[in-house]
Image (tube, rainbow, N blue to C red; front, top):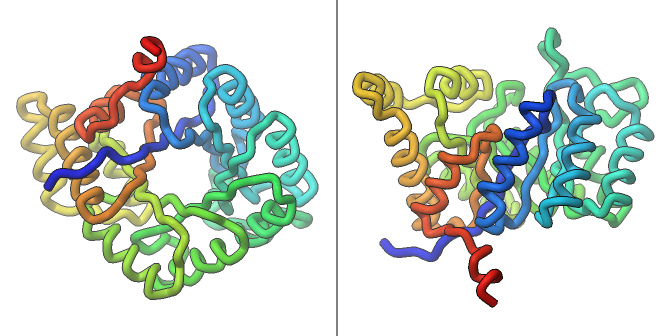
Length: 290
């Protein structure tokens, strides 16, 4: 089935070293010509990269010309401190926030609100919405969040986040298109009418991706294990990863999806190749000719 090219967005993480700073900039240089709707910069577990995120967001906003969204969480900060960070983003011209509860710090197995902080993501979203300064996106879980009582509870929680002031949701990654379609149908049945954007995780390293998926509650189908075992025998992992991500995205687009969000891990080549296969190609040269 033929389809038009989707609109895309990309997630980066803030650099922790000079070498990582160069990698981030190289990643931006590779993907910026694809004219993403926005790019987002993550927040480390427990708020550990708060200043790094702020600096990376500010630098990207000033230097890249991209629409930059900052991740903001509730972890290890008071309400006043969190809103001060948000105000700093606004003053820097950044008007997009991905609002999340956030992962607990390393060594903790559960989220504990700061004594003077936001108790959950809905409280954070409401406070950000009251400022009137931001477009707010939130996370969504097409498969049950490890801490959720049930999948239905996840959907109820997403509806609360949308009702609190979020305008769009980005999903955790998944490996089969039907996982997203079932989730989208359940959200619609629950009265959620905000756009839900699939999160796509091109697989750079299968053992690492598999371990990460299991920690996030993402189902790993047996056929995917088998495919990478066979591909590793003759060094075809990269070819397989490109084909699998492209096929997943194509199925999503054929099912009515118009926007895709890529988790790049600051390694742009695989994401770029998938985008090219989907018809998302560099547009900078068109401006150069004009």
